[in-house]
Length: 377
Image (tube, rainbow, N blue to C red; front, side, top):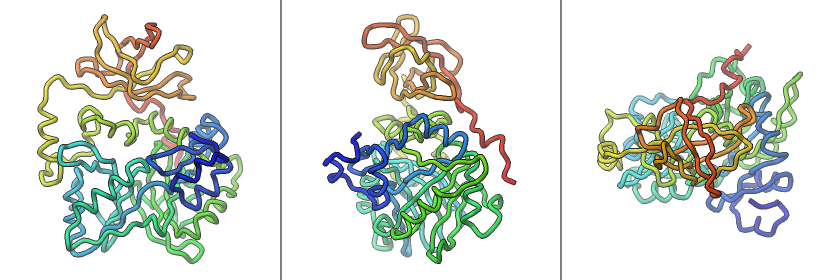
C-alpha cells in the first residue's frame, strides 16, 4: 500500500473518481489498478458498513458488455452457471474457468435485453478481458465499459434509505440480484441491488463525468442517526469474510473449485463450458482439502501460511486472516484435509516461533449482518 502523496501513484491505473479520493486515503495496488484501501482506518469504516452506510469506490472493477448475434451462447460457454433462464434485469454470480479448470475470476453477470454485462474483480480485470478477447467469435462484440463508465457501491443496514433517494419507485420492490436502467440527473445509469457483505447492498454504474458528482451527492445524504462514510477495501474485505463472501485473491489464488469451496457457483447439470472436463477430474481426486473458517484469540501471533495441526499431524495451512471487530477475535480461513474440514473442532496453528495457537473451526456466516433483522419501511 502507498500514501497518496507517493510518486508511485503515477504508475497505477485509476479512474478519475479514485484519483479525486486518493488524497484522502491510502492506495493499494490491485494488479496495476489503484483502489482505496482505507480512508480513516479499517475498523472505523467497518463500523459504518455494519451499522450505517458504507460508500465504496468500485471503479477498478472490470465491466465488459457482450453483444452481437451470438452473445448469449458466447457468454454461456465461459461460465459454470447456467444462464439460459436468466431473466432480463436479473443478475447472478458465476465462476469463469480456463481449460485446465483453474479459476480465472468470480464474475457477476447482468442480463440486458440485447446484451450481457460482465463485472470482474479489480485484481482479475485484465485476465478476464484477455480471456474474452481470446475466445471471441465473429458473432460477438465486446465493449469495455470502463472506458466510459464508473461503478460505485454502498452497503449497510440503512443503505436502502439512501437507495430510495435515487430510484423513482418503492425501493422494496427491487428484489435481490436485480437491476434497472434509469436516469440520474438526466443521465442513463444502471442501478443494481447486489452486494458483498450480507447487508443491504446496491451498485450504480454512471457515466464518467457523473462519477464525482454522484459520489458527493451520496456522501452528503443525511438522515437522522444514519451516517454515510467512505469505506476502503480493507474494511470491505473484513465484512466479506464474516459472511464467507469469496474473493478472487483468495479463492482463485491457486486453489481448485473444490478446495475453494465455491461449488455453489457451478450448475452441475450444465456440461458445455470451458473447463468442464477438467473440473470433473478435480472432483474425482482423492486426498482432498477445502477451506473452513476458524477463530483465534486476538492476543496470539499467527500468520497466513502457518501450519495447522491435529494431534501432532499437519492437516492444513492458513490462507486468510483478519481481525473481526464484532467477534473481537481473529477470523480466518484454513485449507484443511477433508477429515478435519468441519465446524466445531479445536485445532492448533503453529506460528513462526513454534508456538501453538488454538484455532476453533466455525460455520458461516461467522457474523450475522444487522440488515437481516431490519425491514425496509
